[in-house]
Each structure stands twice: as structure tokens, then as C-alpha cells.
Image (cartoon, rainbow, N blue to C red; front, side, top):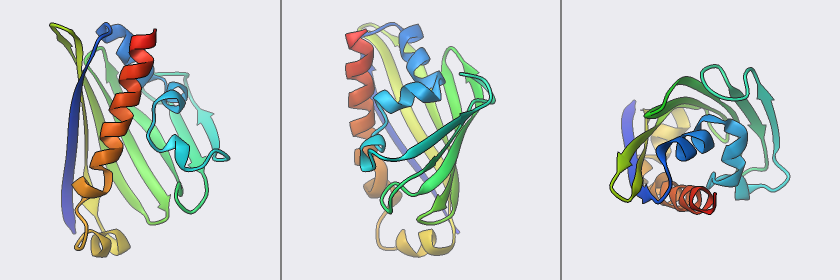
Length: 152
């Protein structure tokens, strides 16, 4: 098994509470997630509370989007922690944390994902690093989050 950690940050010109609202509600992820565009026909189901701890989303999409679930494990004004479980294209589990920190120009947001590569994913990641595999996705997602938050 090979552990990984991928992290990216951005400063958003919006108050921390506005950013938190977009991160804490899995339905709002449709507005900024970099993976939403992989399959416009992706089927998503929302379970549990609308936001915060226990909110869950499952998805099933084309070959690129795969299938899996996200569940908010913990939520506070300064961070949201989400379990991410892929079933397809390969099985994997990771924890994604979005830290929200007041900054002089608004809010600094740091998106970090940590996990273990096992099975087919471990073989694939011997050739490609997770940072190269999803780092650009994080950058795209944070840029979209910035645009949505700043638009109000």
C-alpha cells in the first residue's frame, strides 16, 4: 500500500461563512466540483441531513466519473471533513478536508485529500502520482468555488 496526500489552497474574496455553506452542503458541490463535468448525465442521490455531519451523496456515472459516495464526517466553521469512497473505476477510500481560514482578503481555503492506494490503484500510482492525477482537479475546483462564492 502507498499512502498519498494532495493539497491545494486559494484565497477567496468572500466571508468564511459563505464559503463554508458551499462546502458543507453536498448539493452545492454541483456548482463547483471539478468532477461534475465528467458526466452531465451522472445520477446522484442525497441521503441524511441537507448539510453537515451525516450528509451523504452517492453517484454513478460514465467510465470517467465512476461510482461511489461522499459523506460528511465532521463540520465546523473552520473545516469540513468528507469520507470519499470510490467503487468504480477502482475501489478506494480517502478523507478530503477543506479548511476555511479568515484572511485579509477574504477566506483562505485549503483542500487536502489523504488516503491509501491499494489494488489496481496502487499499481496505477506507481506510474502516476496522486498529486499529478488530481492536483489539477483540485486547482480547477478551487477556482470554481472562488467564482461561485465571489458571485454571491
